[in-house]
Image 1: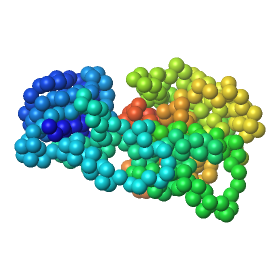
Image 2: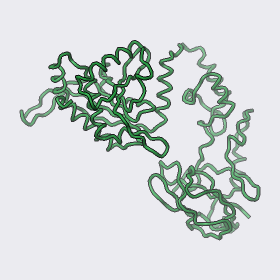
Image 3: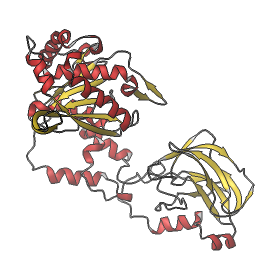
Image 4: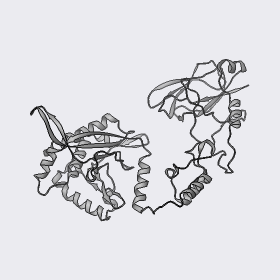
Length: 415
């Protein structure tokens, strides 16, 4: 009797997996088309998953409380030929024939084996691989994501390790393997192609920054921004002896805003969000061929004037590359003043161990309407840019933090 796979469907454009909440059928049950087989929960909703055809449940491979990726095979249904014709569903046997007819020729590598493909074994001993098709409103199977350009075989991984390459380093290589994956031959051809190009060795500092940014970008990051009027802040700074650095004001305002909204600085670890135990804020300092980030401790408990000595000492140590682990660990967020380079907008990237980074741009004179004067008046305006881990907070939470920072900077006497 023909077999039809039960597959975790595409339940939404951004849904990659779903958790089984309830299993409504058992092996041997007779089911009808459109009958609800399971109930699943995604990060957006709880919903039922129906079958596309009637038949008898032959095998199940799922558990309640366990999450399965979209495209995962959850079981098998025995279906009559008449039901196949009526519903038009694809059978295991049809998938196998079609996969074999479209299988690319071997490139001589041993990676298209059991490790490169996920198969499901039925009670009858047969094997099949879920068919990769475009999702539609009926929730047909979708690619499981185990083959393709992003899959790296053991042989390829070994060659990359020999060359000191990361996955991101081969993103420019066109793959000729199954599903578009990059083979060792593709990599060697690319390396030969660029061998005559001008190049220079990356410094340890550059490599450290590259590694941190690779790890940071594994998360979904987003940036929000808003302008602030700098006139009151600049006037307050000019009245101080000695003048504190502009970044100090931003550092202090950021710490106070986070102290009021500590959930925004939480860090996601598995199923838990770890909240800050102290408001220690990192300070991005540009050095030769990279950036160093010393951490200023307990920023929320000290005034701008009290922070000046700590700030000056850490900047000097950073520029002299004399920072120790004690100087750089434990920060919950970072401030970067890219306005010192004349930049008026940016999207800074937080460190891998932090959820937030706040950037401030260069000030620009702009005309702003004044109701008191009844005319446009020139003001100094700068942009604040807050990049955040979207898994931990949403745009509204980030906006509240950013608005509070702006409010404090526009009233510098409170800092």
